[in-house]
Length: 174
Image: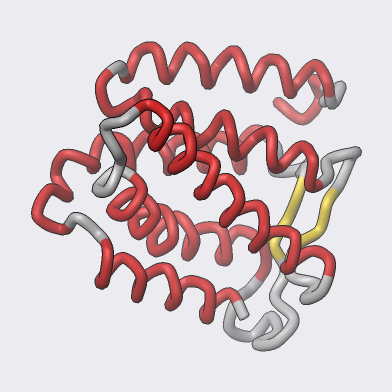
């Protein structure tokens, strides 16, 4: 099923992505991936959520990390080509655009967790936290385009906040 989602995002990017300006989005793409890789490294033994594959089984998509890498390569690049490539100039439309992407990501996660058994929550994480995370994530991705240092600062502060809220044990850093 994750193959299907990745294919949908890639198809959408082919149709609506701003391919002419992909170089402009590349630093933000690296920032996006760096955040996910940092999450995987820091929380390897204490995941707040994880991906599962139930249709193709573990022979093709062997666990959370492989699925996450596939998402980083295909979904994140597709997302940024569309999200940043079509970002409106009007402030109200910008807020609505961010909220549309928050809704889209959150809806996919909700369906995957509730109905398709492709997503699992751990250690108190739930869809409400994911919605909040998506709001911060899409806002910070947009900020990163023009103010990358501010985006890094907000991200570090948000990580510290989540670390404390979820009382992640320091032992996971060993």
